[in-house]
Length: 303
Image (cartoon, rainbow, N blue to C red; front, side, top):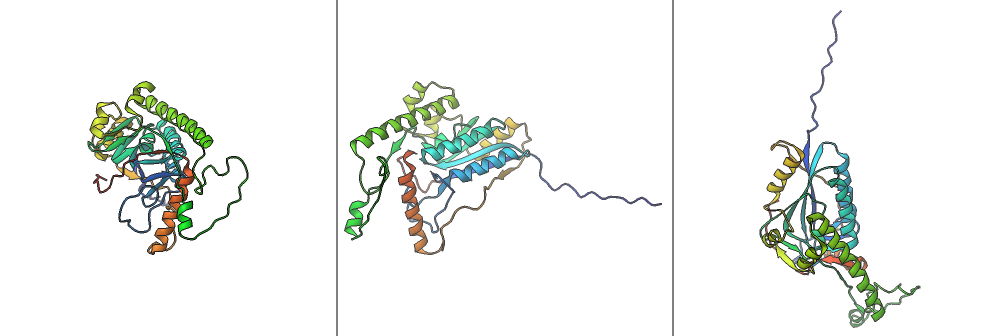
């Protein structure tokens, strides 16, 4: 009796690899978004791309669960944004870093919240001209009551509770609210210092000396101990391979958390207006911000 021979299909699943996660644009609460039309100029929150904490956390969890993902390279091109979203991303990346080597590759900008989310990394690579640092915190909101009045719009607001109007765009902060916000800023800044000090093996006093919102180039950051190496994604990939014990041929695979949240009618000017309005809302509701005050545009990167 002839034996039947079972033919095994070749294993098409890739072997161990280095995962790539992108954090690009303003850091916001919620899902990542891209403007429906290419804006004529950069404007934080309103016209720029947005990196949502939900999307980044989801991608980080995918990397953590995938046994074939031996290491993670996080590419950052962000001037920061929401402090709470930055902390959520950082917490998720810390969980990955506890299990797998995590290396950060900084693009044109990795400042304020963009630097905050880099702190879980075992190794940080910056380009010589990268805008980084900006270790600081701010809090603000748009006040549009005068603008609406000039446009002949009227609005009625019903509120309940002493702090219900704290983030309202209808009026500026009161003196009591300013004092409350200042205490919140101080707490967030102290947490920022703690995160950087633990990451860079420095004291909080040493971090404060280069912090306070000061902005550095990648080369200056290297001199001050804020990054480990000058280079780009290629150098970060090689470091990740080395830390994970992979061969120099191990591939780099991008992790995508799913579809980005996009406004309807992506080709219309109405969609762009909706995108701007959503950015306005996110800025007002973000509260405390880790946001670099500089706007950097038209800088090339290597990815």
